[in-house]
Length: 206
Image 1: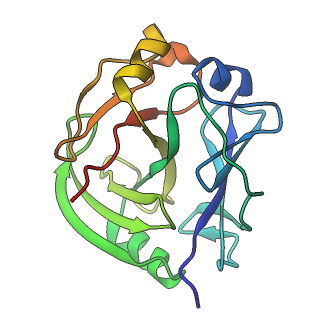
Image 2: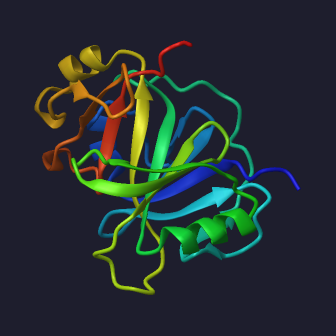
């Protein structure tokens, strides 16, 4: 069985707000890298994702559809976004969620205790779902037995300083990321994106 690849994400979010945030977003959605993002009515958050080679309706509670690659094309985003860097999931039990992901064919690449973007110390696990990374954070404050839940998305932008200049007050301060040599900035709540969204500079060449 091939390793599952992320091909689509459905958001409970306002397409117009994403357009004002520099994304080439229309009512029908948008494409970032090799992932299609679509919009639906709702109170915010990620409604579900689509993965190739996964036939379960849920992976540890994460609503899941069988995915197919989006139509070929190269979308240009005013904020310089080129691809999804990582999708963040929170869980009360990292061991349980890891087991469910691995049962679905999504291999864990690394587990460690580190600092999240909010400055908290957490146990983290990292998986690959195609180009994007899936970052799973253990959040012990969640109710024991609660399912895993989508939390947010970080996008790679070609030039984060230029993105900050374009976006103005919609984007928070550019600061050093947890990943060495990279910089990150989080969209402010007034951007109206419906979920935590950040921009990060590209991975440094090795």
